[in-house]
Amino acid sequence: MIKNLFGIFLQNIYLLCDNHIRFKFKYMTLVFLFVWLSATFLISVSFPTLVYSLSNLTYNNTAKTVLTNQSAAAAGLDFKQITPKVTDFILNDIVNKSKAALVVGLIDPNGTKVYSFGNISKENNIPVNGSTIFNIASITKTFTTLVLADMVKQGIVHLDDPIEKYLPSNVKVPQYNGTKITLKDLATHTSGLPFMPSNIWINNIVGDLNSNYNETQLYQGLANTTLTSKPGTKFLYSDFGMGLLGHLLSVKAGVSYEQLVKNRILDVLGMNDTKITLSQNDLKYRFPVGHQNGTEIETPKIPDVIAGAGSFRSTANDLLKYASANLGLLHTKLDESIALQHLIQHPGILPNPMNYSTYIALGWAVLTNFGTETLTHTGSINGWNANVAFIPTKQIGVVSLCSCDLTDANTGILDFVLLNLTGIDSLTAHHK
Image (cartoon, rainbow, N blue to C red; front, top):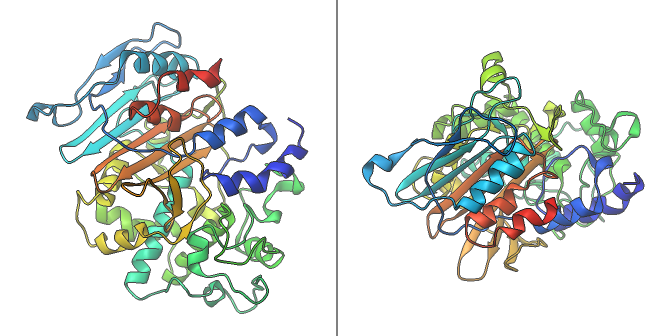
C-alpha cells in the first residue's frame, strides 16, 4: 500500500475503532483496514468451556488435538464444547497456516475453562496453556484507567484535574480555545491528542517507532501538538493520551508504571504472571514468538514512558482473574474502583456487528442494546492480538490470546463465532 494512505486513514481509524498499538502502518492494505474496523469488539454470551491443548504439533493439516482438563470438570460442571468446525479452523488457519498459538479462557459463575492450541515457537515445541505469557498490547489501557479510578477513590487525584497539575511547570501543555485537558479526557480518548506524538518516529518515518523515546521527548511532543478537537467533546483513540496518563500517574505515585500497576491491581488480584519485564526463563519457556503470514517476526518495543498505552504481557489464567473481578465474582478492595471504571463517561463512535449503541467508560468500551451492557477491550501489535470482554449482569466473560498477527487471524472474529453471534463463514471469509 502506498505510504501516504497512512496519512489519509490514521485519524479515521482511531476515531472509529477501539484498536491498539500497531507500528507497521506502512504495510496496511485496504482489506486489512476493513477487517480491522468490522471486527473490533467482542460481545459476550453463553460459551463453550472444555479444554484443548496441542501436543506433538506439526505445522500442517495433520496437527493432533489432545483433550486435557485444566479446571473444575471434576465437579461435574456442564460445559459446551468448541464445535468441530471451529476447532478445524483454529488448527488449519491459525496453528498450521499462521504457525501461531492460541489460548481462550472462559468464565461464568461455575468457574473457568481454558482452550489451548499450538506451541511456543518453531524451535520450542512446548504446548501453550493457561500459564503461557502473551503480549496483550492495548488491554494494558484498562490497567491504566483502573489505577486512575483507584487513585481517584483514594483522593490522590481527581478526574477533572487538568493534566498540567502533574507536569513540570516548564512543560507547555496544549489547550483548545482555553479548554484544558483533564485526566478524564486522557482516560476516555477525548483529549484531542492525536494517535501518537509526531516526534516518536525514527527519522520522521511514520511506523518506525523509537523504542528509546524518553520523558524529555514526550514533553516536547506534547508542547508541539495542536489539539484536533476541544477536550471532552470528541472520541479519538489515542495511544499518546493513554501513554501520557500512565506516565502522569506513575510520576504522582513516585514509582515506575509497571510497579504502580503491580501495587494497585496485580498484587491485589493475584495476577503474578502479568508483567512488562520478562525473565530469561519466561522468554525461553513461556513467551511465544509473534507471527505474521506464517513467519516468526520481531515485535517492536513500546517506550517505557508510554508503557500505559500497551506494554503489558499476561496469561489466560491471570486475565480470567481480572475478568472475575470485573464481573463481581471476585470481591477485593478494588470493587469500588472497578465500579467507577465501568461508568459511562462519553458516547463513542465504535462499529460493532450487533449495531449496539457504543459508549466510553474509563478505558473500557461499553456496548449496549439498552437491555444488556458488554464491556470490552482489544489489543494488537505486530505479530499478536488479544481480546477481553464480559457482561457484568450475566457474569460471563471471555479472554483470547494469540501469537498471530491481526492480518492472519482475528481473535475478535473468532470470539464472535465462539459466542454464537456469527457463523464459521465469518472466520474464513477474509482468508480466501
